[in-house]
Image (cartoon, rainbow, N blue to C red):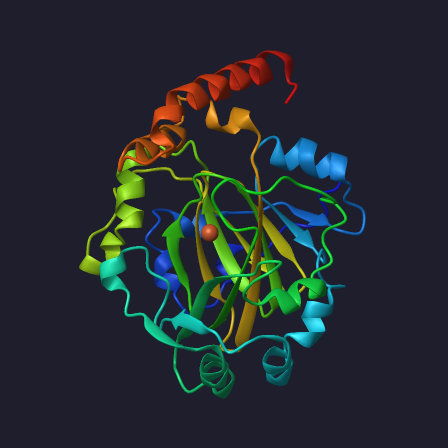
Length: 319
Ligand SMILES: [Fe+2]
């Protein structure tokens, strides 16, 4: 992988920040390895897709969005009020939990949310996952994100929105994984530390249940004998982290400053949904089967097609 440039930050160098307890629930986290780092200036589409997306391996891409107008414009509160309508948004005065029972969402107007996050009136503030669409909410800022040199085109995602943005101050995000779709987590303003676990972890169901239910908040701990092989990186302003499906990840901000993150998603190749030896793949279908939806009857056929695609990829190496 000739595009790999420098190792990421060592966990031992990490300082205690906002939500480090989320990382420390992983046994042996202090031995976490560094996510590979690539230089956007020399990363081609071919290399990105062949060495990282196709292999379902995360990587940090330095400087991939530093040229975006968003990096300069989004810092200014007035830019948001000049560009976007005062729509209703949901905010949290706490970290982004998985369990809805832990959420204490507040509904408010976007301009009021801006006042709160810019004034730092809350110790923790998060406006998570607001969708940006061509013809809808926040459409005025799409022009500020002119794309990626290593991903000039991509198919629309299957489940996630194409673009979601997060506005936050000191708000971490609990461990979770994306069951479908590829993601580039772009730091438009501020820096975040992200820890990840590979999909082939031992006792994946047990670990997933623990992390999803955030059982450490109830004083419980994971089996300390598990070797979960975590990795960690720091996503600085202008960088993006490629987060493949099935990788558990947790996020904590590096400082108490206001931050903006853009999650850009695109469709995974079918073969990624066809490895039924993978707990996370099976879980995607399990979640699709129940609760029953209009898509449920088609799942066996999609699974068959994905399974064949996986076998073809395994034998020929062709996606
Ligand atoms: Fe995520």
